[in-house]
Image (cartoon, rainbow, N blue to C red):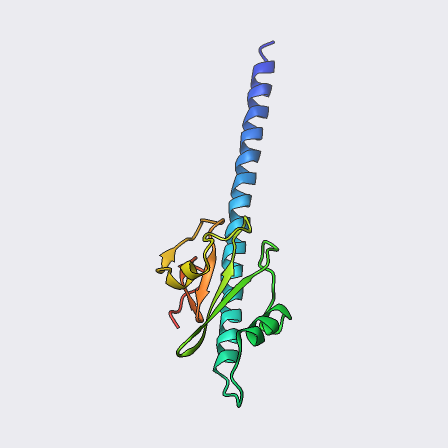
Length: 151
């Protein structure tokens, strides 16, 4: 009977160790998707900004931008969590302003009103996987550590 206690303790210890490994892998998996999505959005935001800045003989409309985006011509349409990217555009006196969003691991937007995304102050969200990753007019607003440049 004395031999049973060490075996149970060993099995319990192995179970705890396995759970810790799974927890660590889950955090690594989520973090890698957050950074990957940020880097991918950086490229998409640059493509959209470049598309908006190309000189044209006719005025570019919001529908033109939305159609190009939803056709996949301005980058991929799904983030690393397989959630669709969200593009919100508005007309301003200087042209078209846009916000490009990944809704994070939960697939839900942080803010219901689109206007809120145009007013967001820069903030750090690394490790907060359910938070939106937001680019406004080509610049990162929610910092995840996967993007280093201000430009």
